[in-house]
Amino acid sequence: MRESTEKVILSEMLIDEQGWVSGTQLATKLKLSRVAVWNHMEKLRAQGFEFESRRSLGYRIKTKPQHLNAGLIQLSLKAKHRKFSFDILDEIDSTNDEVSRQLASGRTAPFALFARRQTKGRGRFGRTWYSTSETNIYVSFGFRPMLTPDRMQTFTLWMGVNICDLIAKVTQTSPQIKWPNDLVFQGKKAGGILTEARVDADQIRDLVFGLGINVNKPSTGWPSDIANRAVSLGEVAAVAVDFNRLATALSERILESYAAFCDGTHLATFADLWNCYDMLRGKKVTLIEADRQIMGMVLGIDDHGALLLRDSGGKTQRFRAGEVTIKKD
Ligand code: BTN
Figure 1 (cartoon, rainbow, N blue to C red):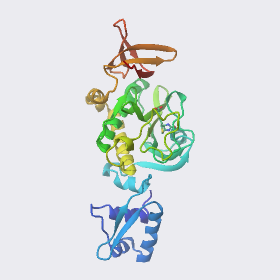
Figure 2 (tube, rainbow, N blue to C red; figure 1 turned 90 degrees about the vertical axis):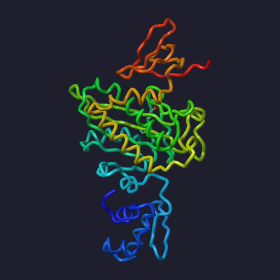
Figure 3 (cartoon, protein in one colour; figure 1 turned 90 degrees about the horizontal axis):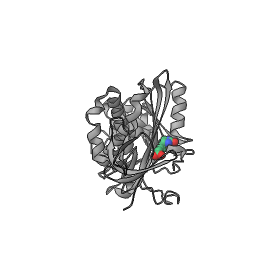
Figure 4 (cartoon, rainbow, N blue to C red; figure 1 turned 135 degrees about the horizontal axis):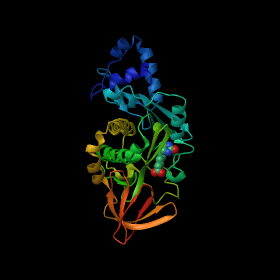
């Protein structure tokens, strides 16, 4: 959001907890008449804000929009991230695809694209990612890390476990991470990550980090093909999830985790964080990798992010990719 009059009005009302600001104060600050200020507040009302007014105190925000609002996110970002460049799109084929196109056309990284809906949301293994509802988060970040491809092996795992930790803290819930990067509550999936990279002369030139999080169950219910596998934060959190607060906290955590990954400082906490949220350790599982099916007990992950499985013969095998299902006893 550019430095607009609406943004100034919001920032004045977000300065303190109480949030009261008088019409005269706003008019003076903006060098506008009170009628003009009122007209700008109408524009904010159209975005979903509701205001409370008191003769002696002025105005304050009564209700914040429940859909993504660029001004609210930007004003809530910590000072060090205030200049972070992001856009909110009403509809796009896939935020990963659009970020990839914008990286290819030279947009300065990092940046992020949120979308309210995706018409071709994509998941791992070429699957479709349910993306028609405004009640979820669909976001992709564009980075130019200039790292060698071998460094990327643990990138998605590191980012995934950070998102899991952030969700636990912001929503006061108990998510788990299912290798490689599914965000899971009681065995049901609430989020997933799709990382895509373009390698150039042995360096990662463009990196797209895509994240989908189910925030609220759609009012019409989950589509039948995912109904028994999907869950939303709203269904597990004791308190209502504030969409914009979550988007702000996610953006900050993603930027900070990315920076820690690039400078290598993530190594100090990665293993502990993973162990804290790992859903699979000690579980008997079936892993499907291409046309192979392997059964075994999960021992954890190695330094390269590979899954360690002890097979029936007692041998430890490593897997870089694959899909895991937990065996029912
Ligand atoms: C998975 O299969 O678990 C990964 C799902 C990733 C979905 C997100 S939504 C935002 C971004 N855009 C896409 O098309 N996919 C990712």
